[in-house]
Length: 219
Picture: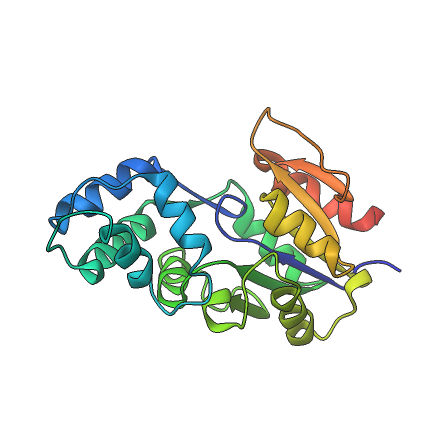
């Protein structure tokens, strides 16, 4: 059965930062008077906080490893503002979303705190660009937990086998979507194709806008 809905991951699939995330993290820490923080430690803490309202618990965990009086809320605010300002759409994506919405139910499922992810959508001027916008901070679980994808399917009101999910993260996006019977399309960084066996197709991120519509027609 051909797809009736297409849903997307946000970060590094539809939008990318114009600055290195580690650099942004260091700058946010400096602004808030905190010690330098590592990207690796940030990602580990983020993975434990996928259902939070803000990034404050992430930075509470990170700062607990340092002797500092810096405010986790202040670091979270600085980082949120810097990331949102640095984010830019992947080439052609806005045209792509407009085109797909004429034919398919369009969804977004993104891991992260509610405030941070909605700030990104506002900065990109994408509020309302999707029929369904889900941030895991408002859900019972984050990707790749089946509950996150089941919530997406319920909101889209579509069957898994009719719903394509497009994302770059192998575990969270490709394996997570496949685990509930959706059709995962794996987005890879330019020149780094490494197809996952669960993916129904692999698309270079720079070619997403030009290749995805034709791919959907062939599924």
